[in-house]
Image 1 (cartoon, rainbow, N blue to C red):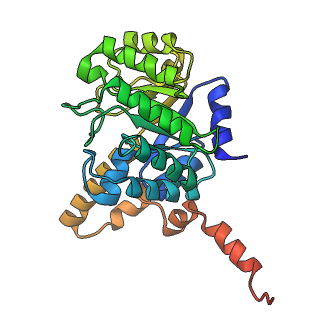
Image 2: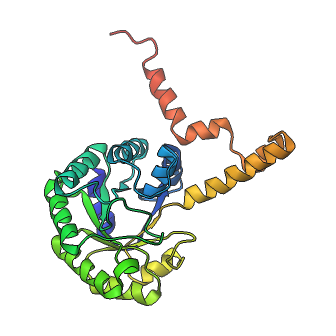
Image 3: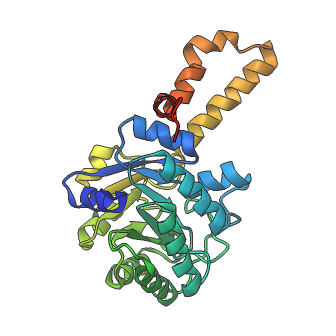
Length: 291
């Protein structure tokens, strides 16, 4: 089954769909091995890990697609990828959709921020006119070759122009044909239930530690009516803390030997996370073969 079709099935089935964020192939493999049904490719994590820049619109479409392709190649579950603003107006948006489809992801989200955009949980965002975003959505929907490819409309207006305008935009984006609605930086449970109860399409919740939205458990988010929840930078924030602590201890003690048992995996386990045994078994099937 195509991963695009599998994602559609998950969104149509009972229960909320959790999608932790991967910023590279290793983190994606860890997410799949942990049993999650979907991997989310984080834009912030991609920007930080691949380019060394913060999430303020400096990462190109080609860099994002390359990371998405590598992640999709690494895992067998559907991958949803951040596509920022679509990287331009309607023609560029159409190219963006085609490139992400070829990369093997199951869906993307595009947002209504101005370029250069910034992380949705940072201040001083700016949004494009509603009509411009609607044009982008129409272009995106027309560009996809696989009808099961999921296009998620992200609205960043709540923190910029307020609740009423954000709802008007969400209504317009759903009317334009968005498969899933993503209202960024929801601040209260009341806002959450209002948006999930207002629209007939699945609604996404963005769980950002130290961000602007309440950190509600998955079960409660399901009760509030959300169908999809992403955890874009959970793994990266935890990894950064771990690496920072490790380097501090190495600098202070001159060794990591005392950390091996409790805070490290073996080299073997690291390689197994990305399929060592399967690859060696495949290699063995060709040993000595002559054609």
